[in-house]
Image 1 (cartoon, rainbow, N blue to C red):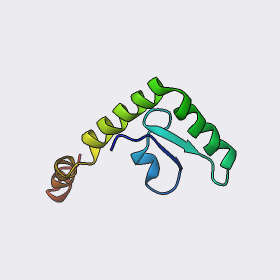
Image 2: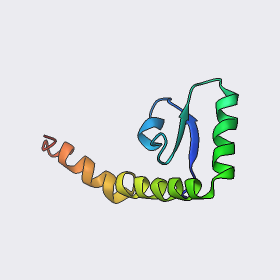
Image 3: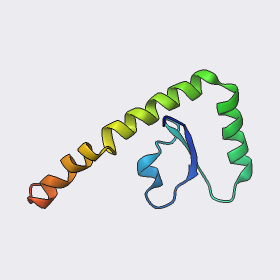
Image 4: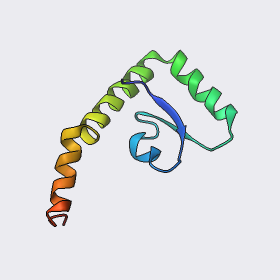
Length: 81
């Protein structure tokens, strides 16, 4: 949806959220960091817009059905490198 994400580095999240580009990855149990990042995004419209564009681009380049199939087929066929 193009919304910058604020999350932690848990399991597969860092693959989906590019820290400082499409959102922010913060330390667990740090509500002060969450509040800081929300404030940054709320008060900096150009930053929010850039991160939104990057979030859409990152999703389109890596997580659509087509891109996942293109990534999986070579593995299945034993052509993964």
